[in-house]
Length: 260
Image 1 (cartoon, rainbow, N blue to C red):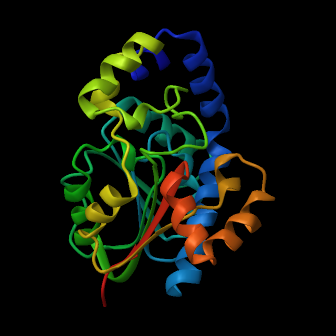
Image 2 (image 1 turned 60 degrees about the vertical axis):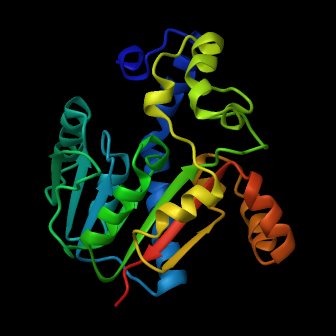
């Protein structure tokens, strides 16, 4: 499954993906809890109603959302992943989950029907970011909140996480696929990974509405030591330091609210 999904036979990458799959249920729960905290702190939003898990995959975040919302709609184009997500929900006795085979643009969700939308580890895999975030804005109800993360194209603090290579994002997009193919025997990188800079993410975010914020996530939700989060909180409150650090930070967290 990993070889077909990621188009690689590189042992280093396969080991990384297998490790991720073993830990993603725990990380999905931690991401949901972080997203709910940010929604509460930033917008006073509380869980309840209908949540949409954009790019739900095998349901790592979906099941955690189901504990806090009356209905969760998981959307993903991969039917095998949705089958695994349904199996996980059934085994956990969770019945308030609807899984839909579909793409982010257009989202198979009615207008103004969602009280909360998340996109965990998804935005850097979407070619039409602006169109997708416009779809998110369409499905959010008045005052509803979106939370999603995205890998920074110009990250200087760690290797690109999908292929474990430094500096891939600094190459022109037309050269990234060939470079990764030569270095990692990874076919299809340029068709499946679209890293965004802070500027590109801000431009795409206009589709949600004017009340959008892009900043540092809680890195403990991504498997990093929890002691880093208080340091990032201090950096975020220091304007000059925050501006510099955010431009090169590995991952961004976007939060946005549909205008009332």
